Amino acid sequence: MFHCNGWCFLWTLAALCGTNICIRHVNAKGVYSAIAKYSVTHFCAAPVVLNSIVNASPEDTILPLPHVVCVMTVGAAPPPSVLAAMSQKGFRVTHTYGLSETYGPSIVGLEGLDVISTQTGQPVPADGKTIGEIVFRGNLVMKGYLKNPKANEETFANGWFHSGYLGVKHPDRYIEVKDRSKDIIISGGENISSVEVENGLYMHPAVLEASVVARADERWGESPCAFVTLKPGVDKSDERRLAGDIMKFCRSKMPAYWVPKSVIFGPLPKTATGNFITDIRNDERFWDVKNLNELSIKLVETGKHETHSRVYLLLKLVLLLPVATSTVERAFSAMTTVKNKLRNSMEDQLLNDCLVTFIEKDLFVNVSTDAIVRRYQNMRSRREQL
Image (spheres, rainbow, N blue to C red):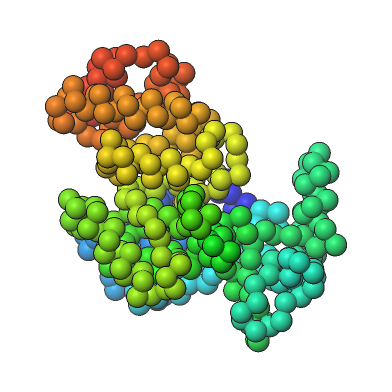
């Protein structure tokens, strides 16, 4: 309800004298339970939530559905495999598109919506192939960013609101969103859509979640790097073999230069609305090295921080906390030392959380590994008491 979409979905239900059912935590079990208990007919969720619904364990689902449930999804491009699975389970999904600057899902009721060339500013042909930027015009578009004339000048160039999203226009005037312009990976002069690579990854039977970003590549400039969360029950003991299997699978589904050169396993950090956090490459507040992914790959390939949990800690600290990468590297060293002191009888995720508490309170620089061990043991003891 804190999100701009609350003005679209919740207020519409109120206008129609509908009832809003609120759940404390967004998970598949809660969604299925609400449908069965309260006869929920409509809900709105990000694609990552839909993914959790279709991959829920049998004990968390209530199928077949007691009635058709209409779903509006927005916030990211849902993988085709997820849309197909939702339909098979009895959900009727509508994919909408918009931005906070355009009053949420705004493709209806606008004066103008088009795809224009980023070079000429002219509409691209409706051939389903020529990529351009999606632009808006109309009274649903914001007046501008507060006290930021430079951003307004760029965003409203030539009388259009420039979304920053790339797409194609089909012969029936349907607009297909390809990717955000800042997320396009340029490898050897070729443009790679991270969304399309992710769609291919979602087709792999072991992949639960996937996010693709650019990593530095000495030969090609950039190359795709995939961060993957595996489905429950998948054998994770040999991550190198799994990565090779996923790359081989991708080669059978997409052009060779699209195939991720690196696959890193672990839980993916998300925003409060459930979207994956990838929007960090142009934000200097969060990191002070040339490329975050280059550092994470280096930490894995050196063998010193070989497991996915260490890479996850790197991502969590750099993405969610305004800390320098040097602090993150010290956290990795501390994790290795603590692991040795505990003789491997530790849980990586709990230790991650323990280190984060020190960093959040600006205590990490001068803290000893003995203090980290004590904090970890206290946290584990409290959890066991619960």
